[in-house]
Length: 116
Image (cartoon, rainbow, N blue to C red; front, side):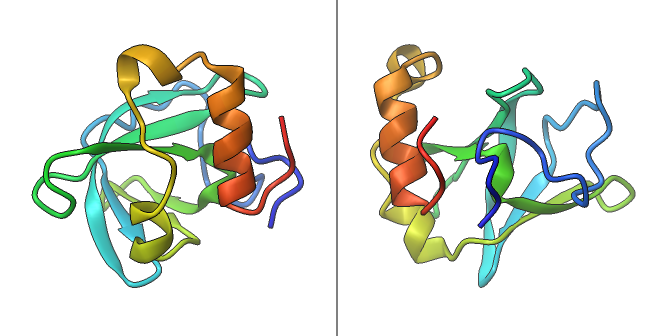
């Protein structure tokens, strides 16, 4: 796992300022939804994925460090987690968790990354 959970990997293909909203998100074992919102903030980069019917219309927050590759031509983001790992992540509530340091610590722990 990357040592920088809340930063895009140098090898991900992320371009600063790129608009990722609407990109499809692929886990190791299949599609999980589309990017609803994202952040490029240094040390606090993430994507919020609208899972649609996959997990009953919920959203999930994925730290940028889980992103392995961004394909701008296909508009697809690949992450190095399984659908089950994502489904079992701590519940995400956008209005409460986007800037919640304790939630980010829980999420980093869940995904096996360093604490913030």
